[in-house]
Each structure stands twice: as C-alpha cells, then as structure tokens.
Amino acid sequence: MSTIALVTGANRGIGKEVCRQLAERDFEVLLSGRDIEKAEAATADIGLDNIVPAQLDVTDQTSIKRLAANVTERYGKLDVLVNNAGGHYDYWQTALTADFATVREAAETNLYGPWHVTQAFVPLLKQSDHSRIVNVGSGAASLNSLGAGPPAYIASKAGLHALTLMLAAELREDGVLVNAICPGWVATDPNNPGGRPIPEGASGIVWAALLPDDGPTGGFFRDQQPLAW
Image 1: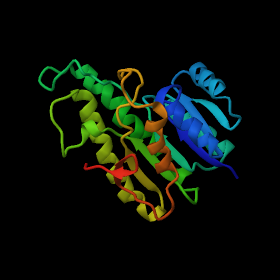
Image 2: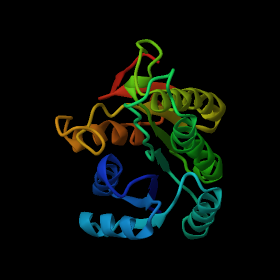
Image 3: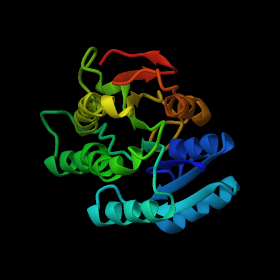
Image 4: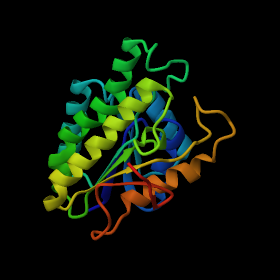
C-alpha cells in the first residue's frame, strides 16, 4: 500500500513545495486547501500523478470531518500529517495595541485548526506502522528568545509548540512521532523576497516526515538542528 501524506494549507508556498518533495519520494500526497480550485491548480502545476487535490479548511470542523471520512474510505490510514496551514503575521500590532479579532483569527488558524485536524486524523495515523505529525512552528515563538513582535502570530505559534509537546507525550506509546519545525524566514507572501528559497524551508519539514522509527519526538527543529522552545 502507498505511503499517504496530508499537507494542510498546501496550494502555495511552503506547503506546495512539501507536497512536491514528498511526492518525489513516492508518497501519495493529499494537497489540501480551503479553495478546491486553488488546490487543483497547484496540483496541476506540480504535475505529478501521485498528488491528489483535497478541500480542507482547518477552521471548519465540517470540512475536517468530511476529509477524514474520505481518507478513511479511500485509504484506511494516514502515514504523515503536516499541519502547515497558518498565517496572520500581524507585524503592524503590539501586544498592548492588539486587536482581539485578529488574535482570535490567528488562534483559529494556527492553533485550534491543527488541533482539530490532528484529533480527526489520529485514528487514521494509528493505522500506520510509521506515522508522523509535523507541526510547522516558528522560531519567532521560541520562549527562550521571545521579545516584542507580531503578537497574534507569536502567541498562536507558541500555543502550537505547546500542543506539539502534549501530543508527543500522549502518542509516544502508539509510535507516532510528533515534532515542530521552523522553516526559517522563507521568500513567500507575506514575507519579503529576501527570505531563503522555498525548497530550503520545506526540506526540514520533509525531513521530519521521513524520520526513522527511533527518531526524535517532542522536538523543535530548524534545518534538522534542535531549537530551544
């Protein structure tokens, strides 16, 4: 049976490149996005037969449950879940001036979204002999060096880091490896064009998806090197 991966928020940027790199390693990849037409266009642009477009809005539990049911029916398992969907880099705000509508939107996408998706797909991950969860975190949310910055983004990504540690502990006995990856400052929208190339940012995520069974879990990495939480 094929090795199945689901990548959220994958119709552009890092997520799209992760799909490409996993497909080149013979995964069957579900390239998911909120807009199915954009997911289909991204799939066509990559041009590999083992990438399948899928509709998934991580802020919509009906959408999550529908895709989980479809994956259950078609594959009966999931080997890799990449929680890539995210955003709300609110560089124009400070913690003291933050608009809480933006804070809530960031939490819905960057924290609650991956949380809901993981809950829905864990039964399928447990059907795999080598399951991996990769949460796309951010070095900007490292408590070790935390300072001023985009408050909604940082707080929600710090929450995702905490979720990573909890999931790793809870799923350790099931053999599910759970790690957070910082892709670095990558040249994707809304980042400036001076960031690192997209394939470099995606490669660390793919590394975590390919970890051996005795690989790390509950870790935070960039370019395969540990980062301080």
